[in-house]
Length: 619
Ligand SMILES: [Zn+2]
Image: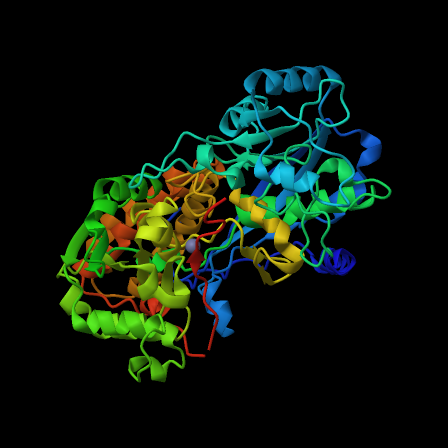
């Protein structure tokens, strides 16, 4: 497998010319005094992205630097993923990144300091269930001996982030190897500072499956990956008796003759992690859905409306949903919109909703609107889509309303789908996002999950975000998930984001914000260009010259901020630019056919779905 993947990478490296077609020139009708906006033009924002790969505790002869660098992509163009499941291209995101790599080996002095820090930061504890499971394998090359160190992962991230060169922008991957030093201790990384807001459940403390080997993105553009930690559960890194058809990385001491992997494979394994996890899933990612589909009109808010359906007489779903918590996390993520979280409760669930839930769960076999979609999985979408007005109150037309249907139900009612937390559905036509569906049961709550983090996670999908364990490799044109040759991609979950499955973060992290803000910045600049192109020939355009000037100024500030890596400001200013031109079009009554076409649904085709399930419910 890894040989095939490497061949693919070599082919891609040869094919990657790293050149971009220049943006289309302005059509000549633009006002001459615009500095940034280009009426009617489509602009690709380009950015050089430095990526530092730093080795701590690895010797130079262990790593073949040329091979590792040869595995990494030269460029990344974010792509909307869901339309591709239908064979369609989503909106061009208008972004291209060119990577600038630098590899570094930490000095002996720094290594001494760092491993001393780890030893002091950790506290002794027993072997985790997965370290014991590793010891119980028949082919393991050593036995992990306790006590082992439990080390706070965000503290290590902060320590490493403080090492960064002062004003150099970019991302850093630290590949750590403590093994082989005299002061080596078996260790795992933990994160215990965020409990589930509804259940108070502390996954980080209580679960063996949350003792990790990697972390990053809490407070910095840093991610560390330590193959001398663990062995851990999340990437199946403890498992060394398997046939390797699911490709995961073993502990570093297994890279030896007679071990799980050859010494030479260490370089290519770290290369795979750097490319498919560090770059594709954390640093420069692709959206699951087009974020701009969820743009409110000028002066409008983003609305999450939760329509709760009570299907368990013994409990109350409202006790497991926190509106203010949800609003706060979403507002922190996209503070350039006003946010509202609405809630209606249907107690008990009405017959129409219950029938659709049962058909969806395959506990009721009946024909209904799903037949036209070819799958009972579509029943919730088609029923609620046809009956929106019954379940979701009226909001002002300028607001963007995302509907979230919550089912406070039981595992029995969910049938074979028990364990499903939710999914952010599309329109079953072209991969445009529609409604969110989520589920909570007494059993699910026993496993730690209420509705609040599911709402934030699923709405995160709805407004754009992918999981940090599935994504898109731009140069290979490859959409991948954490299975088969990419099982190791589960390590992306060991980063700060509510979009992971590991349930250690309740909000969005640094990597989420960088990506979302860049997507929206580039998108709003191009929407502004589209509107300006549309209204340029309008007889009353002179009447809105002030707004157009203000838009151009805001767009200029957006581009400047983007160049300085101040992405929040870039997105905020680009949204402002778009608001000005949209208002200008409205004031003179101009139509905006280019923008309308950009917002219109894509032509039709058939597809796969991404659903969000509990992983390791009980360990
Ligand atoms: Zn998900």
